Each structure stands twice: as C-alpha cells, then as structure tokens.
Image (cartoon, rainbow, N blue to C red):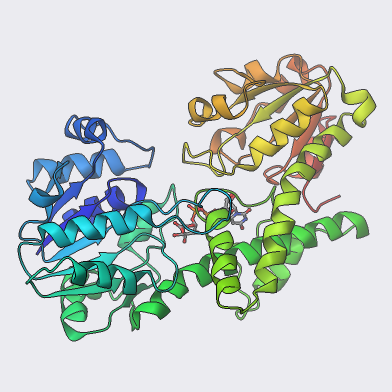
Length: 436
Ligand code: UGA
C-alpha cells in the first residue's frame, strides 16, 4: 500500500515513519525545503524519543522518502493524509483551516489515480465536507473518498501511542473509504487494536471531545488540589481514591501547574467556537479554559508566596527547573513555565532557568530569564527553587548539594515529584500542589 503524508510536522512525521515501519511505502511531503533537506540528512525537525532511529531504519529499508513536490508525492498513493497545522486563528480562537484547504485544493489539481483523502489534522466538525467540496470543484475525474482519522498521540510517547493505540477512529461515509483505511491499519488489526468506524462528522467531534474531556479531568483535579491545601487534605490520595473507581479511571489525575502544549489549549478554544456557532453552549469547557488560564499565573504567585510575599520577593533570585509544557519534548507552546516566569519577573524577581531540551525555544518567550546549562548553575545563590516540569533529571537532585548551593533551602514543587517528609527532614521549606 502506498501512502502520501502531506505535512511533515509532528503528526505527519511520526505517523509517516510508523506507517513505513508497518511495511507500507510512505512519502512525506512538506513545502519547507530546508525541513526536507534536513530530513534527507537524518536531522529531525522536532525532539521525539526514538523518532530519528525509526526514520533512519525505514529510509534505509527504502520504505520512507521525503519530497517538497505534492504532485510527485501523491502519485500512485492509495491514501493521501492531510497532516498540516490547524493553529488558533489570531483574534477569535477558531481553528485556522487555510493550510488544510490549501492542501485539499492542490491534491484536487494533481490527483492522478483513485485515492482516499484522509484528514489527520485536528479539524472542526464539517471540515471533511468542505474538503470533499474542494476536491469535487477541482474537476478531478478520479474516484475519491474523504475520511476523518484523528490522531491521539502524546508528545514524548508518540511512537508507542501510534503502535499500541487505545483505539483508532475512522469517520468514513462510503465503503471505498472504509476498505482502504482497513488496509492502512491492517497491521494494527492484527495487534487487536480496536477500530471504531463512525460517520465523518462524528469522528471529527470525537477528537475535540476527547481532548476537552482530558483537559477537564486535569482542571478538576487541579481545583481539588487547591481545596486540599485549604482543608489540609492530600490530593494524591484523593486522585487514588477516586481513580480506583473504574468509572472514573486513574489516568490524567495528576495535579500540577495547569495543562499546556500544542493541543489542549487550542482544541478547547476551537470547540468553544464550534459550540457557539451552533448555538449549543459547552459551559463546562468554558469554565475549564478560564480556570486553567488563571492557574498558570497563580503558580507564579505561589512561588512569590514561598519567597515571603511580593514585598520580600523583589530583587530575590529564583531557579526555575523545567520549562517545556511536559517532559521529553522541546515544545514550549502554552507552557505554564511562561506564565510563571512572567509573573516572577513582573514582581522584580531575578530568574535563572534550566531545561534539558526546551531552552532554545524558551529564550525568545522569556527574554528576561537567564538560561544556564545545568540545574545546579541555576540553583547557586537562589532564594527559592521551583520545579515546573517533571523531567527525570529533576527527580533525583542531590538535595544536600542544593542546600549548600542555594542561598535559602526553599523548594516549590509544582509537579509533586518529592515526598514532603523526606525534603523537610533535610531542612527544606517545601511547598507542593494539593499537599500540606
Ligand atoms: C494531548 C493528548 O493527550 C493526546 O491524546 C492528543 O493526541 C494530543 O494532545 C493532540 O491532540 O495532539 P499532549 O498535548 O502531547 O497530548 O500532552 P499530554 O500528555 O496530554 O499533556 C498535556 C498537558 O496536560 C501537559 O501540560 C501535562 O503536564 C498536563 N497534564 C497531563 C497534567 O497536568 N496532569 C495530568 O494528569 C496529565
């Protein structure tokens, strides 16, 4: 089976490499010449564990190739995936579909055989209908079917998620579409990964509903954490206590500084817009978006409190450990660290930061922050240390060394990676999320 993947960003590249690894012949297409040149040289445009190796082995096996030419890439393809970005449109939060529709138009112009056109990009309900109209308007004489196949990959765990998915969702309106998609995912059928066939609009909505639900779960436990701090309860035990109920489930109940990344913030906003357009309010999602936004700055204020309040904080120094929105990625999009750093520098606090992968992308987002190349350099002389992202390297810091290096042993753990009793026994003033 031949597959064309239009868009070699995060989703396109991971999906393309994994499909090639299943034995399909895959061409990844991107307009960005320098990205394609670098991919030819084996340089990945993103940081994702295992991706460089997977790409290299499939290129070597002759199953994976790269091109900037859409016409050449889709020639002979049974399935053409659209995996381009759908960023939030400036001003109104709607998903910007101009890239998706631009690609659809180009596919229509160059289609050289019957094919299924699959939207893998996260797109609002009804986008597939519009892609179908665009292809029809192109006057192509070839048979085509437009299918929705959302992706549920998590950054940092994308390859595992692709190869062992909880489910595959396929929204198709005809047998041609369903048949080709069955072939595309046959290797996963054999793994017994459940495949759910739905209508196209339903599949488009499933993606947004899934992300909004996960964002809600996180926001719910974050608010419980705040309440725990007030009433003297422990949020980790609350998570365990409710998560053991199978109807609730234990995942995505880690309280923290608020969700970030390229998906939850953008997709919740886009869902709100769709709901507004169809006059069908989603009040819960509205509340989630608001609560999460204000939480990020509140985390900065939590660090200021640990410094003794606004007055005392001015002129003090804070070490920020972890900048990316989660570990194992260099992605800084909507990372809580941005708001934490901003709140601190606004309050006249000096900030030194370290992140294993995110500093290059973080620099322009927090110009007042000094980046250093290892955690202890940030800690030296600090009045407080704040852990913002739970990278493994921060889980086993040498606490005795930190006590000697820091000006004051004040630790604010926004990811609950340390045990309060252990850290306090060493003489630290320790605060965390939802635990007293
Ligand atoms: C998310 C979804 O988990 C994927 O299923 C989906 O495919 C993807 O968006 C997408 O739409 O492309 P991702 O953004 O990579 O994946 O990251 P997550 O692991 O879901 O984490 C998102 C944010 O929630 C992070 O800031 C993380 O720290 C936070 N989080 C997550 C918590 O604060 N608590 C939790 O229990 C879980």
